[in-house]
Image 1 (cartoon, rainbow, N blue to C red):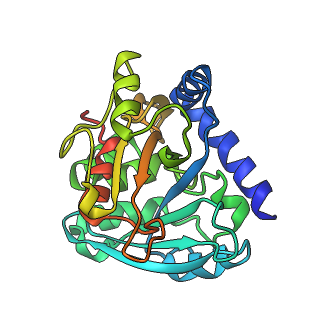
Image 2 (cartoon, rainbow, N blue to C red; image 1 turned 135 degrees about the vertical axis):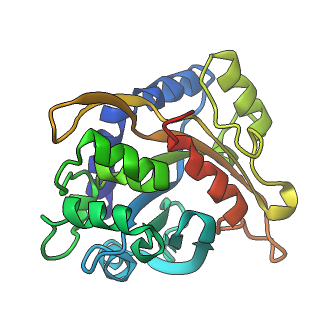
Length: 266
């Protein structure tokens, strides 16, 4: 699978569970905009063959190289950032993983049970949209989510883009993330306000905002159904670094707040 086909498949899966994204794109196009993707994000467990070590080799197949790493101790996460050195227009990839050993024993046992079907290694086809786990029961999902919203989300949504991101720098009629946010609020798109609607400052070289995740109906292993968070849409504006180049990385404090976009309580 080449990079274009990968992102095409990824986008089709994403909009199937995130109808809000299509509404936002339509709104921006009515304002004369062409929407360019800044980055996509994925989530995984630290399981052999499916963790960050495998991901780095996997993304190399479509031209990506790791350029930075991040830690999120309060969420028991670590993450790598990837880009395509030869193509500055290619979306960056932010890939995080949950460190299971840092969770309580009950949560670890649930994750071990639901990931028991995993064999071999993660593939690009899997990553573009696959549910490879054993479905949790509603009780297991609730228990996981109480411990880690990230784990709860991953247990039900599996492998797919957690979010796409509007590249605000490439918009033509909206000059700042503030104008984008004003437009979203005027059109009643609910936004993540953890740490403020706009995360980061110009001194961070990156400012971001995001919608709250859409909701989808999910049937659990025990036959019970419930609405759960699916995916969300992000907006990012990048400032130039001291060399005069656009900042390529991510800001941990802001990313920590963006994770909350899939919190089932919001």
